[in-house]
Amino acid sequence: MARIVMKFGGTSMAGIERIRSVAARVKREVAAGNQVAVVVSAMAGETDRLVGFCREASSLYDPKEYDVVVSAGEQITSGLLAIALQAAGVPARSWLGWQLAISTSDAHASARIQDIDMAALEASLAAGEVAVIPGFQGVDEHGRVTTLGRGGSDTSAVAMAAAMKADRCDIYTDVDGVYTTDPRIVPRARKLKKVTYEEMLELASVGAKVLQTRSVGLAMKEGVRVQVLSSFTGEDAPMADTLPGTMIVGEDEFWEEIDDMESQLITGIAHDKNEAKITLIAVPDKPGAVAAIFAPLAHANINVDMIIQNIAHAARSTDVTFTVPAADLARSIEVLNQGRDAIGFAELVHDTRVAKISVVGVGMRSHAGVASTMFTTLGERGINIQAISTSEIKVSVLIEEDYTELAVRVLHTAYGLDAEDVAA
Image 1 (cartoon, rainbow, N blue to C red):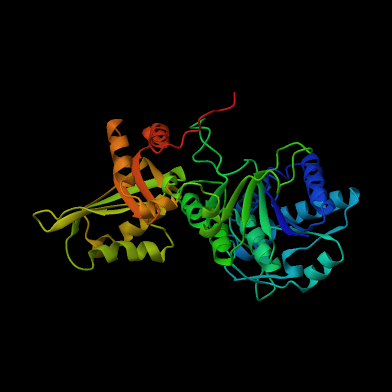
Image 2 (cartoon, one colour):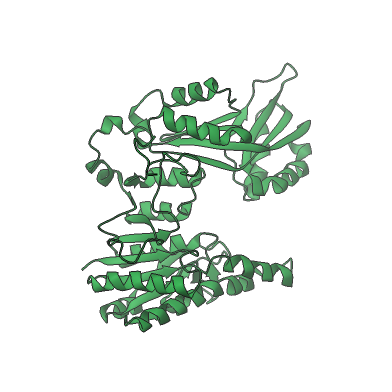
């Protein structure tokens, strides 16, 4: 008997018929003799609707009351799924975050899970019940409902799997796995059988939208095996453990099934158009100048990614270029202009028509020439590189947004990631 956490996203829960389909899928796992806990998201679009109500009520709403409102979406779907399971003859009950309890920090709208009390849930599972748990929510030390931020249901599912010591955590989405790149851009993209935690963390952080970044980090920390697969397959489709999507695992398990380690160079290519470039012109070239730029941004919780400092001008000044999330551009400009006297820059220039292209793979640790291949391939197509950042298993470049799809396609081919055959 295996212990499995099944997580279903908003599109999987969008309406009673889809909830019945989810119930049928859960019933098959129970019939196979598995102990099952299900984590659900709100119906597609419901959280946005509830957020809109909060903004209509007041532009300066209390985050504590905001959490009460937006957590209602998951409460509804957890109750509906429990009803659907009971109607299908499966013993089930819903558990709200405060009933378990899922203890979190008190950072409302972006809380972090600290602990899960498993006593009541263990008793329920031992009695043969399916536990249906609303994702995205918990309770703080003051007994107030909290939410985990957008995509938080993925984190809820992974945290539950860790607390249950589950054999795996199945994340059901509207895609059937993790691909070498976006199949909508590259039809010859291949679905990956296994991806390491580190690779998935990098892919999620640079634009791949399959899993929330926090959930991948938690899975890596706790050693939770995560599987990404589609909920939009027929009811007669094979069981999840016989027809897997993509498994997110540790490196030891990853390399077990790789026939040729030397050939496993690049795992995937991601792109992200939600970037904005800021250039500060004529920043004084002196100690502490860069700190004066980035300390206020950090204090405002604005994440800075790529950073370039040019060679100093004759007038002992330099230009500093960096990227921030596009959604934070206006706030970044405001923060920088407020600190203009302390920083001493002459002019601020920004550009939102940029995109970040990243190649990711654990094989980069032992292979030279990955960056060279990327730069040469883009150069041959006349694509200019505006900024570069690297990690041990990733190289990212910033390019003009109009070249995004071309860059992804030519790099996918250059690294030998194209599938040999594509079904018609």
